Image (cartoon, rainbow, N blue to C red):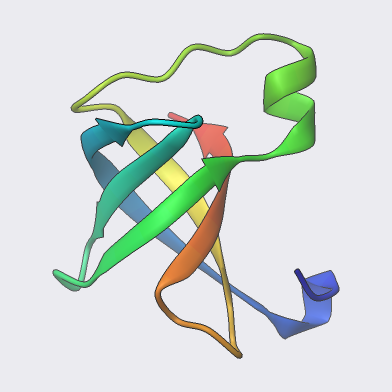
Amino acid sequence: MAKNEDMIEARGVIEEALPGTKFRVRLENDHEVISTIAGKMRKFRIRLGVGDEVKVEISTYDLTKGRITYRY
């Protein structure tokens, strides 16, 4: 992924849990993104489930993939 300057932050809701710690997230603008968990969330073992509201960083180069950085 790129540096933080090249990221778009958005809020969304987890729709589906996929294999390999990936999640399908529906953003506030009804756009779907496949997201993985950020390193700090893995380190501190923060659990995510379907229906959780999260903050996602999306790369400006590929708008279909993102990284979950916060669970509300």
